[in-house]
Length: 167
Image 1 (tube, rainbow, N blue to C red):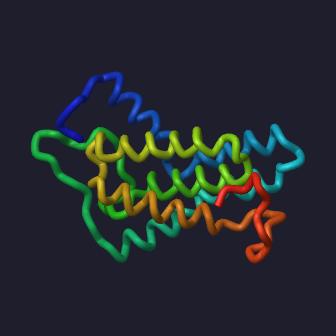
Image 2: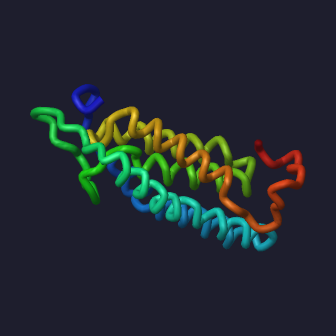
C-alpha cells in the first residue's frame, strides 16, 4: 500500500485522517459535540468521548509487550509522524474503533458513518507506511472490544439492551 496509488490529494487526506485520530482527540471532540447537541444524552456522550483516548493507554501496554517495530520500505519513507518506533497494534486503529463503537452505542443512527470514518483512518495507516496491515487489524479488534466494554452511564452490564442499542 505504501508503494502504489499515491496521489498528493490521497496522501493529504490520509494524513488529515491520521491527525484526526492522533491520541483519540478527534473522537473525543466528536463526543464533545454530541454532548453539546444533546442534553438528554450528554453524560453518555462525554463518557463515550473518553473511550478513544483511554484506548491509547491500553494499546501502548500491548505495544510494549509485542515490541514489533514499524515497517521499513526501501525508497519509501513513512509519510507521517510516529510517537514511537513500535508498530503492533496500531494505536490509530485501536482508538478509532474504540471511539466509533462507544459513540455508536450512544448514537445508533450515526454508527455506520462512525465505523466508516474509523475504517478510513485504518486504511490510511499502511498507505502512509506507518503500519503493517496486521497491525491495523489487531488494533481494530482491540478497539472494537474496548468500545463494546466501555462503561456508559445508564447501562447495567447484566440488563437487557434496548432495541436501539446495537449488540
